[in-house]
Image (cartoon, rainbow over all chains, first blue to last red; front, side, top):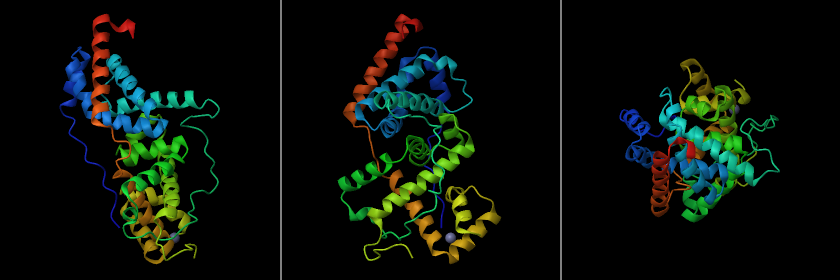
Length: 209
Length: 85
Ligand SMILES: [Zn+2]
């Protein structure tokens, strides 16, 4: 079984030059950085906030905050990692504002009972996503990932959807590497388990052997 | 190797960050344990489906609108200085 290939990232060689120019007040250089990462920031924001208007606000606020705080960017990490960190914080603030009744924190203690042992072990159809229309699939995937606790969801999105490394994810979320790894494992297994309901082979009704 | 031990290593295995010895232990386990094989395979599919899903793509018109709002705020900030933001 082959491993998961990370999304190929664009070379960042010219990026420091753009950041330097933007630091010096070159708004056009900063606009280029916006162009590079606005889609990623929007996706991350919408995954966290689960709300379109909030995600739009997060995109604007995160980039503006990045621009006004560029002086604090040290260049030790990638600009993108630094930006994601800002965006995640903005998104979490939005989420907290909308759901003050629930604690929303990335370090919330998530129950450690053995939720990692899969219960449903039915095999999937060869191309499960083709059993559904685009719209249906989108609905299934959206609902499924929205059911994860924010701390799991965010780690999964950064690592597996946006292709950040474990180290970058840890840095962006201010988590330890073991914490990122354990959340990622549980997020992956929980998503798998939930998707199994939709994707398992039709003939194998009971998957528990 | 027990199934629970296999699962603990699943993420490292899928990400390909694992030493050769552990890797071959995991693959020995996969060879006889159908459940873990299925879990491993469908977890990999889960990741791929999400990666390719293009959930929450930013529509071009909204993208343009957001970008010009950001740029004009940045210009504003540049004119009036850091204190005003
Ligand atoms: Zn097993």
